[in-house]
Length: 110
Ligand SMILES: [Zn+2]
View 1 (cartoon, rainbow, N blue to C red):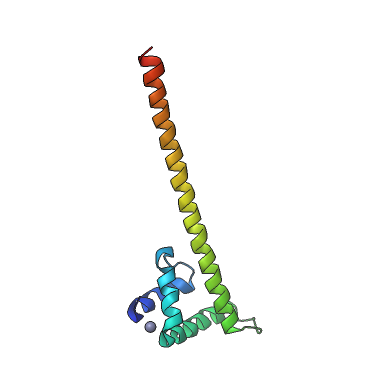
View 2 (spheres, protein in one colour):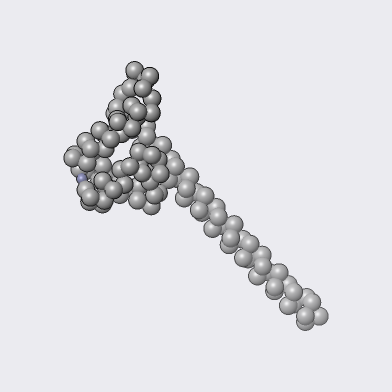
């Protein structure tokens, strides 16, 4: 991911809506590019302060790290759900197949 793409995804990342498929490359760029990191920290801080103005114990680095961890967890859940759906579809497809085999062997060829 380059700086331009990073910039495009910043808003959705802060709103916890970033596409799970690009979270890894987003975080990779975040770690490797000081300019974008600073930019994200500023935007994150702004968003955070607007959301909760009463929080005086705010610590930017901690809050941003927590936010990143939450996004990573969300990505994991997203892929776990997809794997589960895939397994479910495979199982139901096998069931249909086995039913067809059963039908052919035990009913048609009887
Ligand atoms: Zn950058």
